[in-house]
Length: 108
Image (cartoon, rainbow, N blue to C red; front, side, top):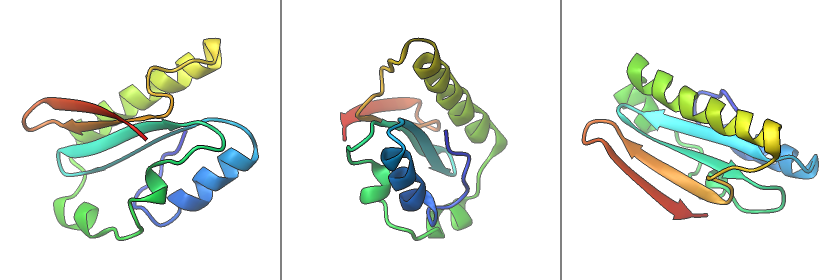
C-alpha cells in the first residue's frame, strides 16, 4: 500500500510491486477528489497515465477528511488482499468526489 504524497515516485513503486509479484493498493487526492486502485502484478495502473505533475495537489491541498476517507478505503482493500487475496478493486480504479459524493469505478 502506498502512502505517498504527490505523483513523482508512483511509477517506480508500481513497477517495484509488479517486479515483486505483489498487488499494489494505491491512491491519490487533490482537494476533495481522488482515486484508489488495486494494481495487480503485470497490469497497468494509474501511474502509467497520471503523469508526475503535482500541481493539482499543491493548488488544492489535501483536506484531512479527504485523506482519512481515502486511507480508510485503501486500508480496507489492503486487509482484504492480506486475508483472502481478493479485492473488489483488483484491476480497477475508484474515482471519488467527496464534494458531490460521487463514486465511479472503471477498469484499468
